[in-house]
Image (cartoon, rainbow, N blue to C red; front, side):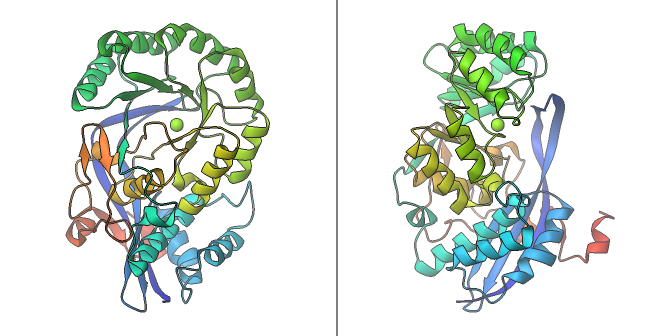
Length: 379
Ligand SMILES: [Mg+2]
């Protein structure tokens, strides 16, 4: 089996409502996300789909750098293909410069491998450890009362964990956590993600004030680097601390473990450069006795289900997963909707990712596809 064609499509699907997070203390509301859908064809007529985030630059790199380079390779020779893409990428912090672009292609290769072997992707990553994935619902930054109302609504839908985006205003963050705890009771897990918003001094104060509301953990309260930021917080608070932006490459994962800079690691296959590297991060964390959580990048159906297959196959990715991105969008590009029910996501058992892309929806939401690069900037 040989790769004969690699295509990419930039799609943009509006959100149902604005989703606000804190990124290094810059507060951005997102009303729609740009996704790149990757389609890889083989000489025996198989088609694999991948998905990643990013805009025109992602399309450019897939169409003009990584895509042409892998023509003629057998998708099953993943190690060789990943090495080739890393060589083209240059080396920086573990070859993670263009992790998103490489991951989009790698996902499509996994879909192809699964289809060619007639196995679901989780069987390639460790087999079925979980058939259904319990989920956490992430609530964007909004006023405390609205935050609590949304938490209550999601718990009623079956979610047993809610994640609060924090980092905009300390008093408001604490009030949100207080109100959510009051409304959902003690049996629901509450976690918070600050997306690097605080200095270590402020983070320590905020987390200590929130400790009476029994947070499951606080994610990335401080800037990802230097790692001393995280170490200070981990050493000063009783609440568990999770590393997200601090762990991009496999080397980052080792740095966090060696420095005891986190209690939990947030895995996201896109940021690690794909499912294969994400599994390596999970295995290293497991060896160090650090449990993991599958996070999300507000993906559509392909991106979500790729992550779901990895959770299904990885015992150590044990925290309720934040792979609900597709539910934030007004539509998806799949023929059949993903099976979300009672705060869980069912993992498909059909070959590859076990989902089919609806061509008409891909066209409907495509901003452009196969467009010469000079035209990209006009869209
Ligand atoms: Mg995060």
